Length: 140
Image (cartoon, rainbow, N blue to C red; front, side, top):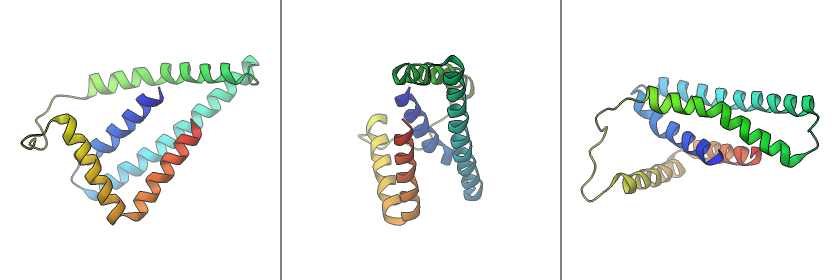
């Protein structure tokens, strides 16, 4: 489930810029996405605390982790299926594929180039993303 969550987050960050050409709208969407993501984490934490205290299993770490993974999968799976199978429609390529590249290699190249640009030009964004990684790793 953690891998699926990271894959989803990567896809969101990769595709958000393709949804609009308006930088202000993109900033607004990204900010709202982050707020919703953190609010969802807090709601899930309250849900888990409620379940564990109601069932009396709040002292069993292994069972708590199992209930958490089962719950997060059961909650997220319908959303993932609806999003990826129902909302994503086929469309033409946004960029032509460079000669000698594949979808596999160009993806890594673009992530690398974007990372270099963020580290070189947008230091505040770099530190924000590092903070997000640390916070999310601490929550796992």
